[in-house]
Length: 218
Length: 218
DNA sequence: ATGCAATTTATTGTATACAATCTGGTTGAC
DNA sequence: GTCAACCAGATTGTATACAATAAATTGCAT
Image 1 (tube, rainbow over the protein chains, first blue to last red):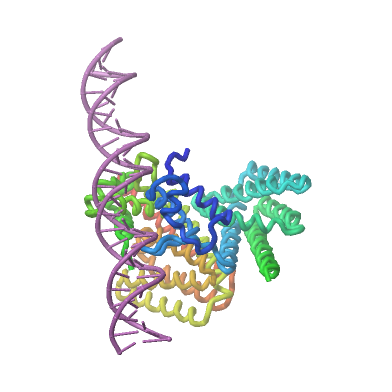
Image 2 (image 1 turned 90 degrees about the horizontal axis):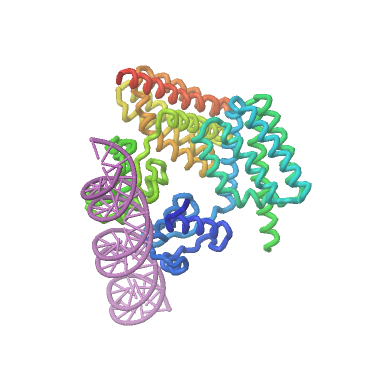
């Protein structure tokens, strides 16, 4: 349970950054935020430090902290890194995954299919996340798992966007199937490649999305 | 330049944790530290939060922050993760590395050789670090580079220990040579494997070291 | 003597007060 | 008119004061 106000405020601020209430370059004014949350500057400052340490904001000493949304280049880099890390998880999982976990993956995929049929985007996303988290865990390396979860969390808003593209969900499902096949066959390189591609495609799709948004803006 | 006291204190505390002045489970008493550094609790608390966010300490709400040295299992997990990430950097670098960077790698290796001949452990370590940092950078993905640097920094003290094993430095050098060959040949998988093995061996050696230390303790 | 409970003490979390420094604009010299 | 120095206001960084909560100690009953 979160009992520290600073932590609750940090969560709230992260939400609002993701939601776009605060956008890139905005200064996070301590006094303003303090009034906004009805607390003193102290817990605000602690919360801001947490944002900084998780990369959502940047601190210029004696000048303040500014939200720092990643630009297109950094986003692509983050997607590439995520793809590589998921590939690693897959390669390790291929030789370590349990039968139960394989069942969980297949179940998640089945529910994803159902969600597509029902046009339930939230349900799809929830099961999709479950699929990926399971693979992280089955890497058998909890340190790596946590790193993967961290990055996943950071990319969440963007990953989600990309799913809105027409036909992306069915394609994504096909990729999931291929991943399970490789894992069940205990083929490390195949699993790694399948996962790497799966996430890399997400990055590409996202890139296309960005490009089309930019076109639309002109 | 570091002008904020909190940041300087954070650096100092990290040093002392690495040096073993504070060991696993120790509570980092705010008042004690405040007196020790001659400041108030405020900058101490900021510094402690930095330690927590970098994983060197753990915070139990309303109870304090405690240093948290990784145990043998977590250390092996960290080494494995480092090995995988370096492998990834190598694979990406194989198709992206510049001629200049290749020259830097070869120069670093030459200086490593010289340091071995001169029995200069510090020099060896410095050039070794340069070697690895160059590969991170040549992954062409600065986000990945930063992640690699972060982990590297975290493992630094342990990596260093392992070099003290007899014959390890010459073996390590041979591995470096193989890595450069793979990179120059632009062979992604070969480079990835060479780097993965190189770091994985470090983990193994470190494990042996731990085991022998444990034997000696009995 | 031991186990439990109430109180006391110590420590963290938050609020406020003060110091240091950065920003922006104004003034003055050239 | 341009540029630099300086002053006023605002904002961050640090110190201290207060509140809330967890640990420790004492006292009591068994």
